[in-house]
Length: 438
Image (cartoon, rainbow, N blue to C red; front, side, top):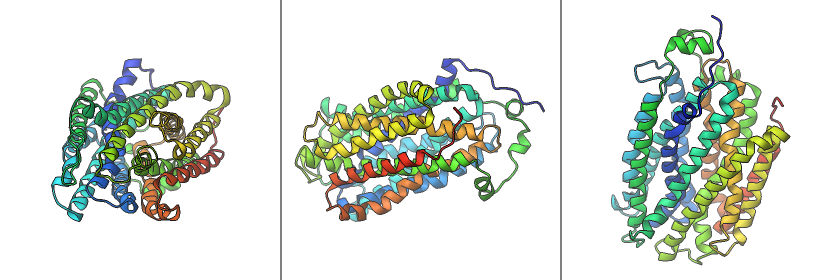
């Protein structure tokens, strides 16, 4: 069968493919911006904080390849990837409502264990809801438009993060309490999670209504072979063995970048509470105010990501993809190194904006490189599911080592920002081995 070139999609066709990603990223922002705050409030020690971040990416690393394999073989009336999106979103809204209430479901270590299990299910469901968006781009978007498609996805991701990070501050601003009672998180934070869950389901419904996936015969016209060949069982080991070189080269860059961001998510709340508000007590009002302000700063980081993402195509066109990738990571490394020296809440916007440049590149460039390298190969969904390990594995390593490294740097959380900066520098060196067509 002659393989046809996938047709160009309109802007709204590309936009609708990824709109649900906006809701998923609101949920991710609420999680990444507040997990350390939640567990610190219900009684976790700073040196143990990183361990609560191990189970979520571990589950993601397991679930994403499974979603990829199963969705590659799924052909039903609801689509190929969308059924997994729906199930993931439904579970996510339930656990989003449970997580901020984990402190009231037990006391002491029991509350921490319950919170950890809920967190595990939250990240699992969000990963299940997120991956179909990346797979649908690979399924229906031609190579010429993939950069645009992932740029739109990056924009919606950052916009979702702005909303998610800002929600706790906004809930506090309109009058919901920031008071900690009996080691339960403030009502302002609980309301932020409830509203985030509502937005998530609305966005997912929009995508499901406005996106129609290719049926098997049409899919075969644009990808070669037929649906039976797509469903042919191939071992994961063989797939990884046959993966193109750039698949592994980008994996290395992702490792150092995601480890750095994991340290940021774990230790930023404690860092700015100490360096700006001079508070190390999670039950104090100043610590909770620092947590709200961190959300605003991270929202600023997301805005900076959107702005930087708009410049990335021009930088890539003039200087090449590798230069754009390495430059973005280098800017973020400077941002991490500056954070410990900032003692004004408003000046925090500068280093986190620099970090946002790295985040923009992490969202757009790796999947452009990898999907281009996989173009024309079957089992793209499986490959992209396995590629999620490049996100999950470094987070697991950072979670396992975080407490140990914190001890080595004097148990001062702000020093972990220097560790993150070093990790990004290693990421810059890893970019040099990527091979791209100019």
